[in-house]
Structure formats: C-alpha cells, structure tokens
Length: 148
Image 1 (cartoon, rainbow, N blue to C red):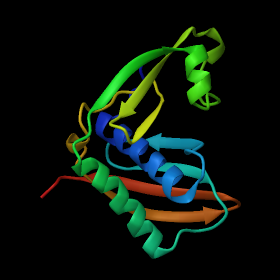
Image 2 (image 1 turned 180 degrees about the vertical axis):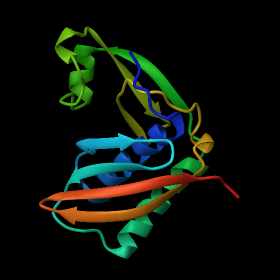
Image 3 (image 1 turned 90 degrees about the horizontal axis):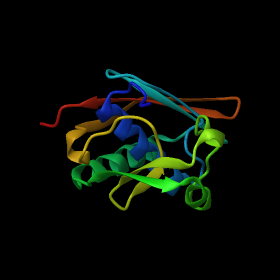
C-alpha cells in the first residue's frame, strides 16, 4: 500500500535526506510531514545550521534535481535489504518477505512505500524556508518552486 504523498515533494525529501547524510554524516530524518505546498523533516542533530550550511544543503539538493536523475523502483528480499539499509522505519517489516527500494540515480537508495517522480527534473526548484534547532532535533522546512 502506497503512502498518499505528493510525488515531487516526496522525491525532494529523499534528496534532502541523502544530502544531510553526505554533508553532515547524520542519519536520515526520523520524522517527516510531506505536503504538496510545504513539508518538514526532523533530524537528530547536535546544533543549528549556519546560513552557509543551509545554502550548501539547498544547492546540493538542487544540483541533484538538475542532473535529471532517473528514479527507479525495485524489489529486493528482506534479507538483502537488511544488508544494505537501516530498516527501523519500515512499517510491518516483520510481515514482509520483500521490500520496495527507491533509487534516485546513483545518489540515493532507501526502502520506501511512497509515490515518486520518474526523473528528478520533474521536482522543480527546492527551497529551504526555515530551519530550527531544539533539544537535539534539527527541523528543516522546505517547499518546491517552479523552475524559471
């Protein structure tokens, strides 16, 4: 059963997660609220982001969008998925023999049950609207803009 997310926003969330992992070495978000107009992701983190870091994060996501990366869906055995991914956020994983994996080019891959675009250029422009830090949690709010 697929989650009812906006495919553009949900694909952008995947790119943001991988950017956070690669730039800051943290885990993917532990909580996300994905809407068509605006979304947010929460990360366990140790501080607020600086303005240059916010800019770097936003530019990293937009670079991946501009690359027109293909978004591919594949199914792998649970055993194989356990070797490659952290599965703690996968719902009902104990009942599954196979998991659905979403791959965004060679940039990101993770288990996911939500809808996605077929190519990153469909996403539009990624814009971080605000960030906040409190009690070990970094919140990043973002939206998508039409490309000029």
